Image 1 (cartoon, one colour):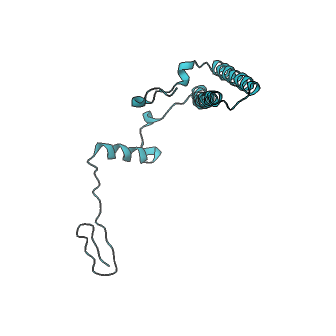
Image 2 (tube, rainbow, N blue to C red):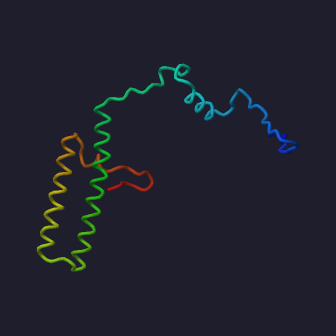
Amino acid sequence: MNMTADSGVSDGDRFEISPLPQRVASPAISDFAKTMAPRAKRASSRQMNLDADKKKNGLAQLVLTVVKLLHELLEKQAIRRIDGGGLTDEEIERLGFTLMRQSEEIARIAREFGLESDDLNLDLGPLGKLL
């Protein structure tokens, strides 16, 4: 089969692809090619210098943001259950105490990592703030 990339016609058992040009015209493709080049060919100024403390705080911020989001969802669900009348006074008391302790613990851990409440509220662009 003999098929060239230009013609799209087959006439046998071989398949040939015409060679690609060596020069890339698109700047985006060119940047991608530079990034994918072996490390020795890349410019050394493109290396990242990551601080271990910043990575740890970034991970803590992400985890606490998810925990805070789940906490707020639990609070909303608790309010729905209370309004629906499906809980006894004792269950309401226990639920309120648990949510209060959970909120205090989230705030304590955030302080430990030097995070404020605004740090746990991600900006989702056109969707607005997460929390």
